[in-house]
Amino acid sequence: MVTQTKVHLHTLVLVLFVVHLSQPVCVDIPSETNAVVGKPMKLTCIYCLKRDELKSKTWVNWYYKPYEENDIPPEKTHIYKFDIDSPVDLDGPYKGRLRWDGTQDLQDLSISIINVTFNDSGVFECNVIREFVFDSFNPSVSIIKEIKLTVKAEALGDSAAIYSEIMMYLLLVFLTCWLLVEMVYCYRKISKSDEQAQDTAY
View 1 (cartoon, rainbow, N blue to C red):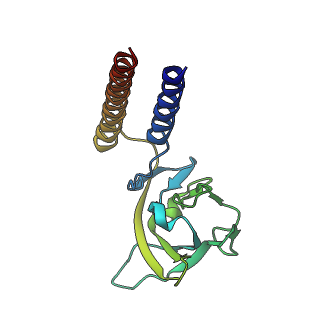
View 2 (tube, rainbow, N blue to C red):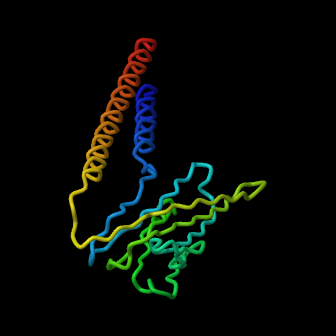
């Protein structure tokens, strides 16, 4: 009876271990920079959080400025924001053309252009401010990410994107194999421990 209880406990530990390994992992990937006229376009902005940083307040401000022409500095326009708990579609040239495309945990802070036009070529800026909530103090940090967007009439083959996709699949295969090896190792270790416990009992 004692041995059977140990088996159940070991099995529970193994299940919890597998669940922990299978939790989604935040990966900071760059945004696509080539858009196609008439198609939606996601402007990716990712700011990963550490385990001890999960309690935080987040503000996100998106800006747009056209490419510089004739040595005249372009004007930057505030086009979208996320204020602590809700996205806000601001008045201006992008009113009604943007959609919040981030995640609930606010590690992905992306937006999407619903219908791309040639006028969208330019620099998009993702400005993120986080205020972390700790017991004794509330520090804040900020990051700025720029996306230099080029709009084309039709999609072209992108070797870099294909390479990135292949590497992503290879990484998934590697992580899956590693997880299986860890599971087999844990199972053998549990089985050996149970055998030793049975030998001791006899």
